[in-house]
Amino acid sequence: RRGSHAAKHVGTAMGGGQRFPQNLAHSIRNLAVFAGLFGLKSLQRISGWTNLLFMVFAPDLHEYYRATYAALCDWDRLQSRAKHIKRNFPERFSVFTTATYNFGPVTITLPHIDFGNLAWGWCAITALGNFDPDRGGHLVLWDLKLIIRFPPGSTILLPSVILRHSNLKIGPNERRFSFTQFTPAGIFRWVYNDFRTDKDVNSSKNTTPQEHERRKRDRESRWREGIKMYRRW
Image (cartoon, rainbow, N blue to C red):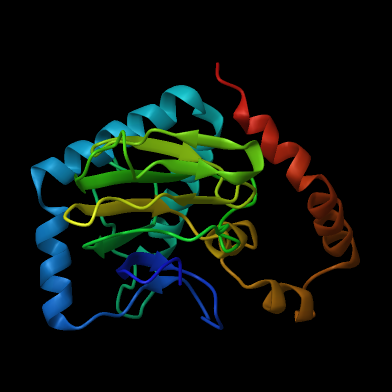
C-alpha cells in the first residue's frame, strides 16, 4: 500500500502469476462506478491533456506505449476465448493500460517507487480535491531533493520506478484525491515475447539457441535503448 487511503486499480494488468494480460476483476457495482468515472468529460479532458503532454515531451516513449497497447488489443481480438482487454479511455485520450483512483478523502502517499512499472517508463499523476497547495499536498521527489508545489488539477509525468516519491500532508478540513495512469512492465514483456511469458519462452523447445542469445543481448542493452526514448524531438 502507498498510504492509509482507499484506492482501486482499474484496467489491464499482467503479473502476479497471471497467464496472460487481462482486465482487473471488480464487482458489478464497482465496474458501473468506474464506467461512470471514465465517462466523465472532465476526466477525459485530464487524460487527453496528459496524453498530449506525454506525446510532446517524450514522443518516442509515447509511441512505444501506444504501439505496445495497440499490439496487445490486436492480439486479444484474435483470441477465440472471451475478450479480456478493455481500454479505460479511447486511444486518443490515453496510451496507458491501467489507472489508480486514490479516493482519499485524504490521499497522502508514503515514500515509494513503483517497481512493477517499466524501468524507464513514465506514469502520470494528477492531484484532485480542495486544499491549500501553499500549505500542503506538495509532491516530494526524494532522490532529487525536490519539493514541488502541486495544486489540485496539476499533472506530472515521472519515471516512478527510479524516483522515490510521496506527497505532504494537507489541512485537517481539506480533501485531496489523486488519479494516476501507468502500464505494468509485464505487459511490455508479454508483447516483446510475441504474447508469451518469459517462463514460456525460456522453457519452450522451439526457442533456438540463437533466440536465447538475442534475448540475452536485448536484456543487456534494454536500459540503454530505453532511455534513448527520452529525446524530446
